[in-house]
Length: 230
Ligand SMILES: [Zn+2]
Image 1 (cartoon, rainbow, N blue to C red):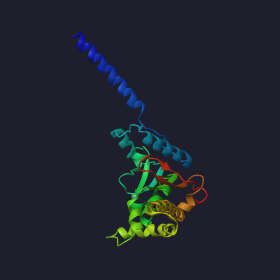
Image 2: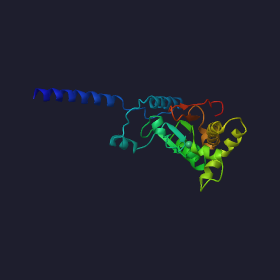
Image 3: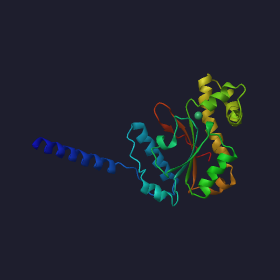
Image 4: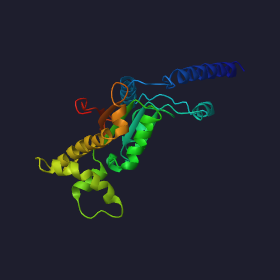
């Protein structure tokens, strides 16, 4: 009996410690974030947690879902590739209601993607837009390898061609061409977004555009300086 009681005591202490840890480590942020700089800091911090493996617990409770059913206040629009290795909520360690995500192979911008970005900026007042490319992108590789694209895949590769045409003339092996095309393709997508009258009107201190590239093995997102372009 004595043994049983001390075991029960240990179990209780263990449970208390565990519950204490999990409540301390649940991710939270201010509900309204209107500064693009603050939004960028949150993304960088989340990516650092992801890289180091110290991801936080997320509130997926019915209470949180109920709160969010009244409205959403995401703080960043992420235009990223559909690639299964690059899920924005995971790589930025974010939760329900945090990111407005537009995913399309090759992170290209057509009127449909642009409309989604415009909606988020204009109606949801999201302060930051990030176009995120990544290493070893299948869509970019398909464009580089050429050949006849099946079905509607050519609708994607055609959007990548302007970047590829520019990069093809530079020195480098196939892998280098793929990576450089991916980087220029991000800038081209940003250019398309920045030319939208809705976005043009919003850009400034309250809204900013960024480009990024995700490294598959390290999990790191690199943020090239695009402040002079957009
Ligand atoms: Zn991709």
